Length: 332
Length: 253
Image 1 (tube, each protein chain N blue to C red):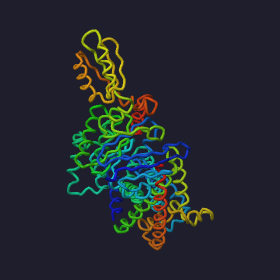
Image 2: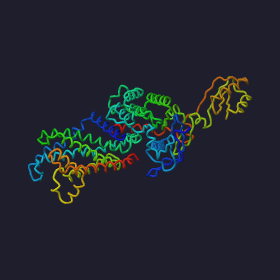
Image 3: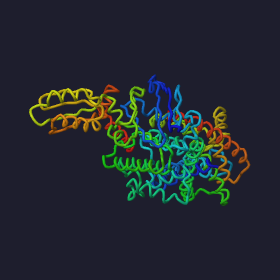
Image 4: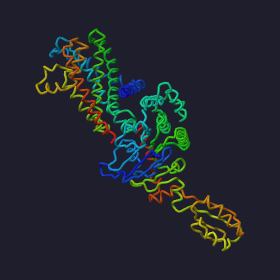
């Protein structure tokens, strides 16, 4: 099947000499939710702006449903919905009017227009404020309106640049439930940039980690976590200590990468804890050792990120910065 | 066809914005009314300007009206600068609306503002004592000229906005353009009174042609210069829409 996005060897250097992309290769399957995770300045927004036909790459190729972003921009713009990182609605008209303008631009038929708009607004929880001028909205309401404007036009692919920035956790949940439902109903592809790890973890089918203009890791959230060397299982056995026979046996198991025993405590590193644990407990019981207590520690995406990009992601107050920028734009 | 529809959507957007905030229309009408009422009355007493038999106050009314609408148009670029700073322009540029439809649509949106400007100023001028040609068709023609001319000046403004991308720089350049356009035109005095160099400038200044057309349609009823005026305005529009559409891509880079 033709991928929704097919990017190869993409580079982009800005006028000032800033190398934003240093050879990006990426494939995104149709109908999937794909997260591009990376710190500030990693090239996330540049990549998105190339994919949405706003910028031309220096070298390399980017295709959206087989259409070349540099040469077939007009055709791509008919398929794509886009929410930029900055605020992108008119603040001096109402939420409903914003939707109406976008509906007309995208040619939503007149007969269904009013219903579709009201439905989209209701889904985003903006029902009772739809006639209010947008300048009276909170940051979160504006973000939801922007996403509603995009869903309205039923795009085949959605490009979302930090879609839930400035939203509180419950609003983020609402937005993602809607996006997931939209994807399910329409088979749409969702490509989003984020620096919220939990968001990528919870909602993305696949994640690519970008750092300094290069993709440094790619896979499903679980694959990525497993790829950093496995998970940790801690067992406490009944009695003083596990028998040497049991320890030797466990050490010899294929599933177990590493084992340390200290009295009644056993620490095991395994590739996939949910698969390995039943086998481990079974093996212990066969050798007469009962387990009193089990804890599992899965690596988080933060650990993944640390491993691939060499830095923690949520350091440096980046989220706060962006929120302030958005507020400034709103006031200005 | 779709482009024409999208130009219409941009105009509708502007009408909706105006509906929510009419304040700016009123405050912008203060200055031109002062020009007509005070400057027009006093300079009219001097009787040193050959107005071709028109009362001086009547003579300058079209010029002042055009100056005021040109001002609105030239500063329309500020809206574009603001939309660039936010994500609105990015989003529009990723929509199916072609760049030229965006530029022409937004420019003509400024034309809508100009019409409202005229609708406020003309009744006030009537009260002050300015006499208009009592033919509604002539007045309608004058409004069409104002509408399209304002669109052309807004296109200049969008063109400028694609080079001067911050508000401060844009404000400066906007100021630097509007008054020279006004003073080197036939808005306040006939071309025949100007020094030679100024006359040459006035001949390539679109404001001269717009003022002449509107003065003919609104005040004097003399339409002898109208064909040339309309031709000049048409050329001006085509050139400005083209230039602004080509430069528009720069704006988000």
